[in-house]
Every structure is written in structure tokens, then in C-alpha cells.
Length: 518
Image (cartoon, rainbow, N blue to C red; front, side):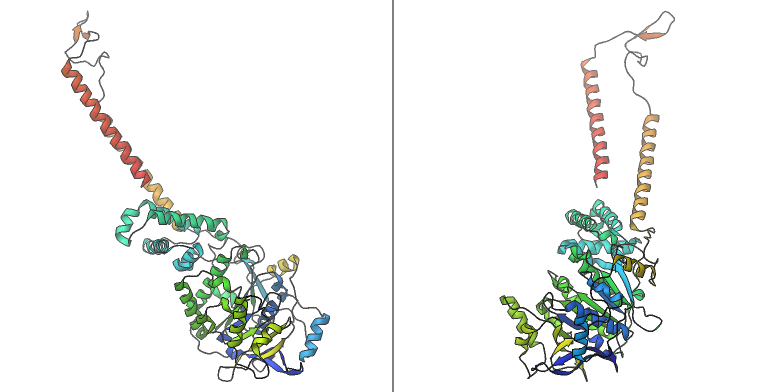
């Protein structure tokens, strides 16, 4: 599988179906990115599996997503089956040995692999806006939220941190708008509803600590093989936007953390992005530009990115132009869009005079592909009709028991399987609100005490009268003379006093409720 710095992909055939020559991917061009396309059932997953095996054997760590669960078999030694042995004999693969690849299983939900998380702060406002399908105005508010968190020392780790910060911003929108720009309460409310939807979709499993360390997906074994990180994505695919955003975040983290290495003899990491169309569906231009920038520049950091999708039209032309290594499985041409895809795929290859590329794409069998890789000075090789080699690991999924055993002996076992919840924005803002409420209660109590100390109400007929309207008792004291009719002047004065008192009371209540609402 590895010959003189080259990865064996398969063997090409002549038009008469006789064996032509072995087809390789040069290891030093592994970081020039690639594309694996083809209709359902044509062998894309097996191609991904044999490429991952080959890179691992060469000492290159690999990260890939397991969409259907059948890629998990890469962790177990393969079994001799007639069709596999026949393919090995046909392409001249001798000896054909079976071997398990070193694998670490990951899962955002912590069910079929080790928990993988990041923090809200690491995700950033751009990717969060994409995840929440936020409008331009809402994205602006989200950017302000991150600015406030930075200036206020409010760590944003999980969803409740961001929810608490948005609540704070909504309550103090007027004061904050004068400093950071308009903060619409409607936009804040929309973002809060978006966070609730994310929580219901299981995104709270993704945000938190301990956050994934990039070094843990770039491990090698003691015998020099690269570890293959397999992300369980069958459940994650129920929320395709979260799946695409997570992989894009991981790609961005690699881009930001890894140093420049130029053109190494072999990649430092190979990253397979399965169902790649989900990354670009309905993506705003600013996000597509960001993806293009990362793909273009991450090559010099020693990372190869391979997009796996059904249709080459799923990938924008600006990104497609960066992909030097191509494996094209069969495409169907029943609809106008499919016919256009076949034509596009054919035109991206360096032509081979031995056959018509466009015709060949629709006539390829399962496990057969058109292959063109970079060679020499980085020039694409002439496209060849190739039989893909059989894998050394198992075809198909592993059992739950086998998965649990592999997880128990994993080099990251116990590192990510428990949540950590240190003090962050939620706890800080909650404590501030508690102290503010206590201070307000103390202030009100002090004001009420001052009012009570200033005097008390007097009621006629209860011994509180003045000289008027009283008479002397037998013991010489003066007592009430009973009910006396009020004069017109007295009645008018009391009515005015009651009116003033009622108005002041209403103003106080309105002020208190207003402050609570704000």
C-alpha cells in the first residue's frame, strides 16, 4: 500500500480491460487536497476507507466522519472474502494482507465515541450565526455580545452563558446601544429563540468543557502509524447544519493553531469532509469566502482536505479549483442537472486519448473510478479508468461490544468523558444580579424606615385630636366631642391631600415595575 513515498490506490485498465499500470497518490502531494465523488452505492465509502488506511500506514493522522456507521469497520482486521480476493488478484495486489487500523472514536453525544466539545467563544460569532441561521441584524448583535464578553471578563463556554449574556443585553439595551451600536430587543429575542432550538436539537452536548485539543486528533502510535479519528455522525446527520458547522470549526481551529511548514514530505494531518454539500448549502458569501481562504492556505500548514460528495457541482468553483487529487466514481445522467454534473466532472480531468471521459463516467462499475492525482512538479496526471484496491480492514460496521472495547483502551479514554462547569458568564451575571437585587431591597427598606420615623397618620375620634372639637372629661382631661361635621374648607383640603398622596403612590409603583421590565 505504500511504495517509495506513494500510496497505492488501484490499477488502471486499457480499453480492452487488460491491466494497464498501478495508480498512486504521491505522499508529498497529499496536502494538495482532493475530491471523491460519485452516486450512491458506487464505492465512495470504500475509497475513503482505503485512503485513510494508506495515510495511516504512512504515519499520517486522519480525521473522518462516519455518516452511515459502516466506516467503523476500519478499526477491525478484515476478513477474506471471494470478491475481495478476486479484486486483489485482478489488480496485482500481492501479498494482500488484512490488518486493523489504529482508531479513536468520537461522538458529539458521547454515545458511540468519546465526547467532543468546543466552547461558544472558540466557535465565534460567524459560525454561530451560520448555525442559528441568523439574519444580518442578528449577526451584528451576536458580534456585540462577543465584544461585551471580552471587555467584561465574561467567559462564554456553553449555551447558558450566551443565553445569560443576551438576557443582560436585552435588559440594558438602551445603555449598551449608546456604546456599541443599536441593540434591538427583537434581534436579541430572535437569538434567544435560536438558542432554544439549538438546545432542543442537542447542541448543548457540543458546547462546554473540556474542549477538544487539536493534538488529540494528530496522534501517532508507538510503531509510527497515524491514528484515525472517526466521528460517529449517523445521529448527528439528523441536524446537518450542526454537522457542517462542527467540521468547519475543526478545520478553522487547525488553520489557526498549526504553524507554517511549507511543503512537507508528507501531510501532518488529512481531513475527510463527507457529505460536503452540507457545508455549502445556503451558506452566505462571507462564509464561502472563509472556507475558500482556509482551504487555500491550510495546505502550507501540512493539512490535506478531501471533500466527499455525490456531485462535483456541490462544491463551489473557487474551492474546486484548489483540489488537485481526484477520484470520480460513476454518475447517473437522468436529469439535466446530472447531465451537467457529468460534463463538469469530465472537463476537470486531464484528457486521456484512450477513452472519452464523459462517456466513461456513466459506465463505471461499483469499485471503479476515474483517477487523476498530482505528480512530478505538481502537474495532474492523465485520467485513468481505475479498479480501486480492496481494504485491509473490515468492510461494514463493527459491533457495539467491539466499539466499547476499543473506546476503553483508547489513548484518550477518560479525558473527555466527564463535563466540567467552571465559573463563566452565567455564574458571573447571576451573582451580579443577586447582589443588585439585595442592594435594591436594602435601599427600599432604608427609605421606608425614614418615612415611618417622620410621623404617623392621625385619625379623628382616637385621642389624636387638637384643641378644636374636644371637651373636658370629669378628670380634667379633654376627650372627643364625637362626630363633628367638616367645614367646606376642611373637606376641600383633605380631598386635595388624598389626591396628591394617590398620585405619588401610583408614580412609585410605575417606577418600580418599569425598572423590573427594563
